[in-house]
Image (cartoon, rainbow, N blue to C red; front, side):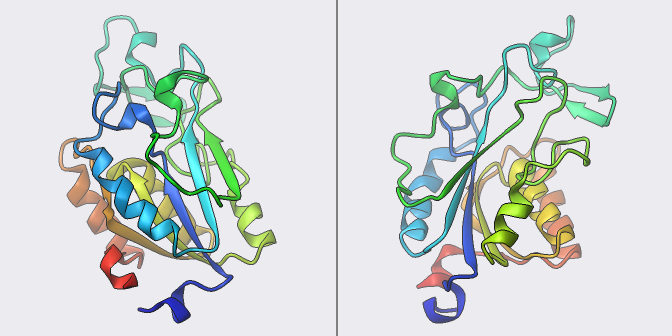
Length: 212
């Protein structure tokens, strides 16, 4: 893999949810989440096209355990669209926790895509809300710009990166996950399940060194 064959005008780096609440000290910290930042910064400098996604929940979002009396974070409830993991309050709109980490550097990113702002639907994927019906608009954006090869990095590997990669394949994009530029929550074996799921649908997990 080299720059000439992978980093043309049809290639885009999608940086998933590198926000304060998902980094150490945040409300829903992904273990070692901040370790991805220098890797992603180096990658972003190599890509002409970059998209950033941003979790952007209203207060009282239905995915928050605090919205369900008697429930605790990481328990699962039945939502109208299927099982929903309950999370600590995180990435609340216009709070410091929802901001991108200060050390993230992708000044040429052409799009910041906010997701999870519908109060009653969570959103892991950059393409669809968790009801699997409500689009974010990312598919149309990518197609309108001729972006067909997608490289995903960010937080967390086993939730938002996974769902984004799965939806990218369903939408017909050529998709890769840069695994060393991700970190996992690893909830009940979810990291291993993610690797198996991605392999089954033909999404390779690669590493940033392959861009050298």
